[in-house]
Image 1 (cartoon, rainbow, N blue to C red):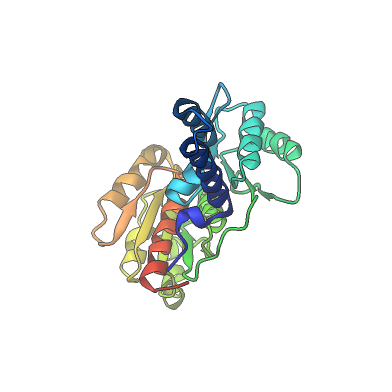
Image 2: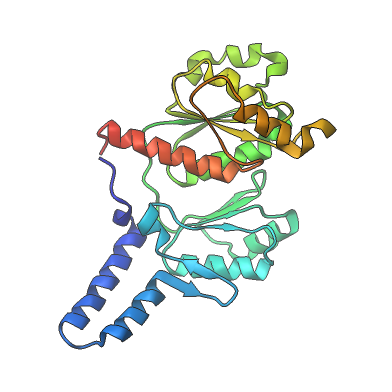
Length: 270
């Protein structure tokens, strides 16, 4: 069976600190009200403009991610440093080009991973255990790759081995049909498509693994910024498809890793 979430280095340190705090209360060396205040400080770091959830990795098995769109570089850097100081891995998503470079320069170090195509930065403070099951990330067209990469980088950062299969849309359906044997080897599939969003239906009809469909905002006017793809995926006649929001590669990668982890438990993996 996989290790429980609190077996992570960050989780173990937090539990050790909380246990020490409770011992002080039990021995009469610390007032319960003061202990509660200290415990809250261990679980949440109040930065004024942000409440950093340092307990999330213990509670959910995966650390809090930083959605960077709309945040200033200074805010992102402060949040990331706070999480790094708490022993948390830090996944930063949706960084614009200028912001990406500024944040990367400030956080530069051996634990920083750059993923410009996905518009992501990753601070790997502590190693993440690798799963045995593989996640397949499939995208319909080259213009869908940034969203697909966001899903791939997320799943990899959380511990899932990932294979990428790009530009396999239904406009040349032989491109996906010739990959059927490879598709059958994945525990979970993330399928990313814009335009009419047909690719997840095709893939789901070829495999037994669950398919996470990601509509993208790629397309001409009548695609309505990804709404046509979203509705097409929601109306798929192929069973076994779950759909995330438009352009939500992070959400798809997170969900794929969580589903992959369930497979580890079912398989009795150590």
